[in-house]
Length: 167
Length: 453
Image 1 (cartoon, rainbow over the protein chains, first blue to last red):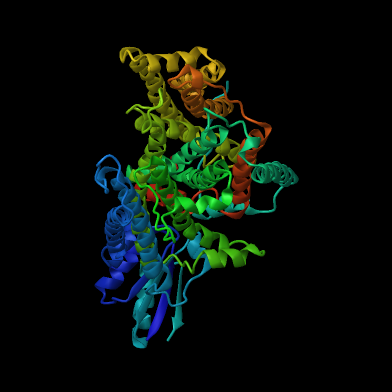
Image 2: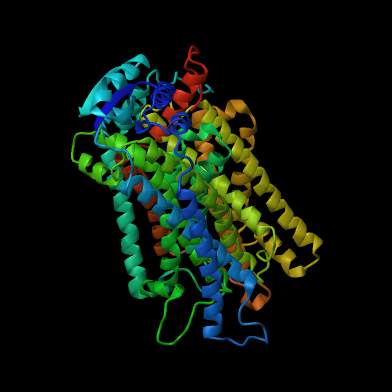
């Protein structure tokens, strides 16, 4: 297998390059970008991030833990005050709310770090510092015999530079 | 009065990195002296705290009937300041208000430093600092748990959650810009940025998860920011102290928090804009919009002041009426009138656009507003506690030198942390302002570069 990197100058050109490569039968494509871009994300077509599931699980964990902790602790050391119930749901809702947010935030960040930072897909060392400044990268993984075709497609969409990295 | 004129926005995406990361370059002598001066004041505060910790709370002005003083006032003040960052970063993000992009990073940093400063004050206030963990529900030999029905315990959870969430929200947004700094600087900080960037490469996979995480964090932080100052207000409103026991407190406090927070954003960003020549980024529309926020929240706060007096009169409750009479004409009359002047009258010129666009005038007004908002909390606490039901229990509180030194040191800490942040991390979110550049280019490729960030 080989990887070919095309360098572009805008999100629109990058998403156009990805679209052309995909319609030409190349499916293993990654893009580098200095800014978030819906165009590029849509062209790559990976669907929604799994981070949303972490947020949901975090929120549900927080609200459950908030109520269980406060109610259990109230009964664990029961204080008799004027015949009132030991556990009082309205004030405990505040604790449950705060823990919903806290666990939601913690798991959202955890999910992002796990999927985006620790085990990111598609980065095969083609990164260059200009990708955090003003250049966009389109990285295509293909068979060695497809390299000329990929180079030709990348040049056609206006890449300022096309390089074969491995293969 | 010369109004602000917009400079053209940068012509190339690379210029964004160059301009914004230039702030991280070698600091001037003036900057170093300023940080050292702030550090000296902070150390004076640490010495005052050590003195108070050794001798006890007798070294403060706290005594019956006033057991909440400058420390709780300052705690509420800094929690309030911390609100603008989340408002700008989370709420305005959800509303797709793109003008926020150039100021959100500075406001988020301000939030983090303000909430860290705020968090110290309950600890300082309890006197025996080493007992702070009593506030947490931890298993212990006596089988005791914290009282979850107490607003003070709600505060522990609210402020802790807010602190952690603000720091994480700030850190996640910072990752792509730290990577940009890593790719540009050449000195020792390159190693620091390499670690802090966590291997960021800007792949579409990373952006996909990053964008989703920022969206969800915004969604979570929006109700959080509204809840935190509501919970702080319930520290007062849940008690039966005249002047405190009112349902208007939560919205009144939240509006006041946004009011003071927005003023503090202006207070810190104007010197940053002038010192580092960021005129092309922090622009007329920012001052215009922040000025509008201040006008709106000042009106709400002014309305709340009026309604408090109306309710005291309309309730026919002699204790409420006495408390509010005492507030306006009693021992603390000076604080009340500073509060009303700075928070209701001083912002009135901001109704005029020409004033909102005059940077020096807006900056001076923002400082006066912050003074007024500190006094607001002082007035609420002092007039409430010093003038409760029985005349035999009326009293007067005046802060000791120890308390005043710690108060001043808290400001020194806040500004010192912010100044250190300026030299370590990009004060403007590079990827967000650049995103607008590309968006502008895609939709108006042949138009002049005069758009807003």
